Amino acid sequence: MNTLNAAPLVFFQVLADRNGVPAALLFQSGPGPVQALTVLAEDEAFDSLSAQFPCLYPIASDAALAEALNVAGWKALDTITVHVTDEAFSKDLPPQVAWVGGAWCMTPPLKAQGPQAASRALALQLVQKVAADADTHEIEALLRQDPTLSYHLLRLVNSLGMGTGRKITSFSQAILILGRQQLRRWLNLMLFAARQGDVRSPMLLARVAVRARMLELLAKARGLDRSVQEQGFMAGMFSLLGVLFGMPLDEVLAPLAISEAVAGALLRQEGELGDLLKLVELAEAGQFEALAAGLAAQQISREDFNDVVVDAFSWMLGVVKESLGSGHG
Image (cartoon, rainbow, N blue to C red; front, side):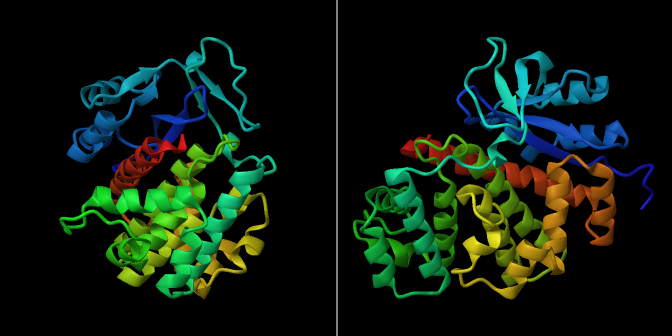
């Protein structure tokens, strides 16, 4: 590939509002010809992002790119309205601040209290049961211990419709209709769903949802089979469990029945999934030159990567909206 004409790589930073809730996407791109990005900005999937969520770009962006982004519904961001911090989140902000960026959601958690700690512990037990392919009645027995989790499971299945034409009122029905794979995904997301007292939760949910979907789609772009794509999703979901619980990741993963490929990727960045996780982390850090080299080594085109980014963030927005709309915000 002629790198002089290669499409610039793109990624989006999720900005929180003054309450710490995901509230906007900020456009970021690496070096390369701007005209290639104007083509991306005209893509229907890219356009749909601004229809779902406030989408912003740096006010100093190239004029041609800014024009294309404006047409796609993105708006210029005045940097004085953004507070960037890697420290614990605080609502004590200057009045002009509208958005909060930075890695603050990756800070250690406050000690979980009462219902929050119990609910997360139960959700982790459920993840363990599903990962171990436990009997449905064992999973159902755990669900009955947490009215919030059980309510949202039934709400999810009924909202999907699932082609049944009837309301689902029992846990066993819901588990059967949803299927083990989708149940596993839902439980993983529920671990990160906002809990009162942990202001990091909504932003962690956004970050982990992007990671999971990106790893799944990058595995597909790499030509890996469906089982590896599913393992990629799981690796993305589990990659921030240590941050969520404030524990070493190996300790959190120890009770889970996960494959060696997923464990190797998460704990040692080994294997195909480990290589793909590195790519996502480089994108998160804005290290576009290293990202370009990594993509070339994996034989993933820049255009395919950009498409993966758009898809992953669109999927994440749906997850976050469902979470906040379900009373988790």
